Structures are given as structure tokens and as C-alpha cells.
Image (cartoon, rainbow, N blue to C red; front, side, top):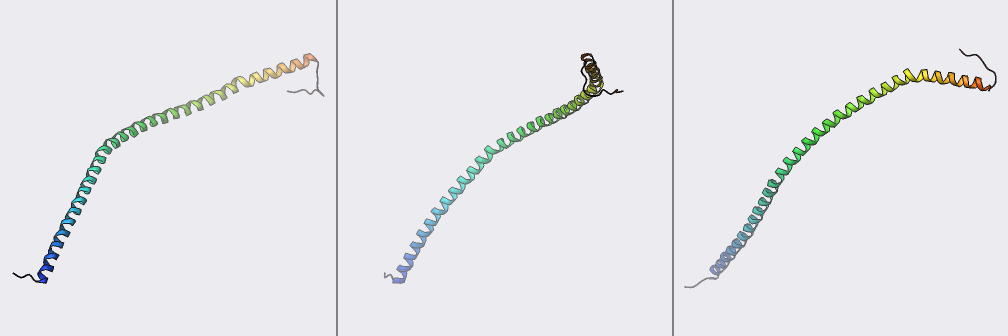
Length: 125
């Protein structure tokens, strides 16, 4: 049996191709393992993130409820402040003006009793 140079070259090419396919298979296998690991990591992150998002949603909902209560309290405080301002104005108008008149009369009497006059005295009504 005689083997020609072409047959030897073909055999070498076939062996080289088989080695190439075997090496590429290993690379593809490793790439598949990396993809499997990435898929597992994404699944784990998803499984851990979903409860956190749910808890965060509940927290935000509860916080919004508290903020709504604070809005109502703030509105009530603003109303109370306006009412207190009106009451103060009414008190000053009702009590303050007569007290000012009494104080003015008292000051005038004091000045008249002490005998001190400043400049010309004019009669006021």
C-alpha cells in the first residue's frame, strides 16, 4: 500500500480540522458555562430585588399617608393662625383703643397736676 503525498496532506488537514473543531467546542462550552453563570446571577439578583422593591413600595405608600396627614395638620395650623390673628386684632381694637384713651387722659392729668407745660397749651377736643 503506497500513500501519496496528497493523501498525507489530506490526512494532516483532516486531523488539524478535527483539533480545530475540538478546541472550538471547548471554547463554546466555556462560553455556555459563562452564559449559564450570568443567567444564574441575573436570576439571583431578580429574586433578591423583587422583595426589596415591594418593601420600598410599601414604605413609600406609608410615607405618603403620613405626608397627607401632615398636610392636613399644616392646613389646620394655618387656619388656627389666621383665627388667632383675627382674635388679636379684635382684642386690640376692643380693649387697646379705650386703654390708650385712658392712658392719654391719665398722662394729661399727670402733666396738669405737675404744673409742667411745654410751649403754648391748646385746647383739644
